[in-house]
Length: 581
Image (cartoon, rainbow, N blue to C red; front, top):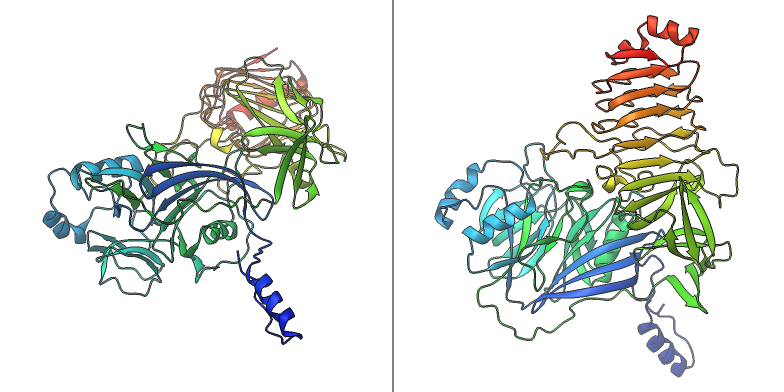
């Protein structure tokens, strides 16, 4: 938070000037500060602390952040690593010789950490790990990369974090020297420079990963979770603001999105554990990585300095007065559904918690004084509730994901005060906008989808899962979806809506559906698909491309007979039996 300085105008009398200077010197303010709502810290070793904090960013979104602080003086090392560098039987001399001809590739973070731990420092312990730099399709880091003093990549394109040969740490610009560097790993942009945020305000929210250094030599590694219902992901600006609030004088941005990975080994853990939720919904192989290693015979000496810098001065206020919750952001009362510190709440236009029953899909959710208390589906596990749809602010529809029985429910938002069209926005898996795809990280785990009456359209890529390996070589997840129940109000199904759902069976297309998008059921299906309408909908092309439905049922009408005779199904990839029913 920036200090508000005196304007240096001479005021009289002199006593008044002195009072003003003292007052201003003690006052701090930053309207764009990220504010903490709660946090919990874990000591990994003396001088190394991991903290999980829930914060509210400048855009009033909730973010879960994982912060690792390695204080200056801690008996720990920070090293960079890469797939195949620390091989069985290798020595420091052999690795130095091999450094100039390293085989590029990808590997998950746990495997890279295990290789280092077993080969380079069997007596040490990797207690934390982070993914590193952006990379090319071959896995070549974009910026400078140094391991054990061996220069693997000398690119000047990005700023970089470095552990120097004298043991000190720094962050340098891409053009600065690496002659005195022992370990180095780069990042795309400088987030903080000279203690000030170095990036412009932006609106793109993503899972983020980065590293910063403080003036006292403390190293700060931060992960911002995203693509999940309870955490929106951070803009680059707000991510930089978190580093600034943690006291960093310089910080850089590592590869984020599905690559953002944060692991730690807490007391009682036998191995490294993922603390963030991978943005792809599954672990992604990455290029370069950074490890924090507890040195041999690490002492329990007292380390001075802050183990965590609190961001507790919150602009988000959740209060419980006389049993009722109220909710404000920046002093403004909030209306509607909110996910706060892992729980679902419902507030009226006065910002007061509502006692109300809301039906989403076929399930009724009961709120008492603002807090979600129960669901009529007794099998429901943790319930995540939020907005989706095409209306302003995405509040046209509601979704509820029931973690535990893996069901996704969608229905009209009864609190939306404008005409409710029932339309969903088009999901875009590539952009991975958290508002547009609230269940992105759950996509492969959903088993059943129930869409309630009143919903008129299903957007593009609604439950899309890729069929092949993603660009970095990681294996794509296999969808578990078996059941989809579509409402009688439905009119359109978007392209790729149920793409690659090999377990999906017995789909019934409602009578009002007038169009089914391109590859909507590509690579999907078991059992049958049935059309209830008397007329065939408009097919967007390859609707059933490589689908495994064994039979299609249609109405015994002249319109359908004409469509079947014209090979409408065959032209859209369906090569099995079509029967009249």
